[in-house]
Image (cartoon, rainbow, N blue to C red; front, side, top):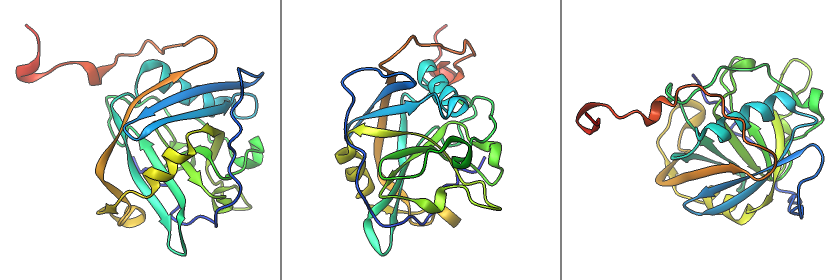
Length: 218
């Protein structure tokens, strides 16, 4: 499965940085702990219900735990803007079924500074267990006539300093859209937990936790 997020974003603008004091209607907060520090997200369940449901399924199952922030795409003309990408990559043991693409034209959620959105392959309905966070506005990722864009579904409310630190990491390797954008020194996604509402695990097998070979318990 491709994990494509466009490689070019617009110049940086004002960050969405006001952290809510508590849960608000239609918002579910998720705290991501990384090896560079925590990131607090506010997910818009009202305007992007399918996308947030998918993301929260990965969170509630623990499918993001132990993965990585593996990509930092910087704009050549403005290296402090771009996006970082994280998730399960192509790990079939962690993946959940795909879901219909909720475009920005449908949700009204644009790709602004701090927006979180789903990475996907060439097929619009191929988003799943990989996501990206924009640094600076990225209107090229929004839907427009003839182009579906990407599924934005929330924004960072705290931890943009962590996001920017990850974006600045040395990169290299990769192919095609990923060329020279793979983070060279691991940035771990330690855990992702919802702060609001009740967790709703899918109940599906967590195959990535099953020990095999010599490490398997007898």
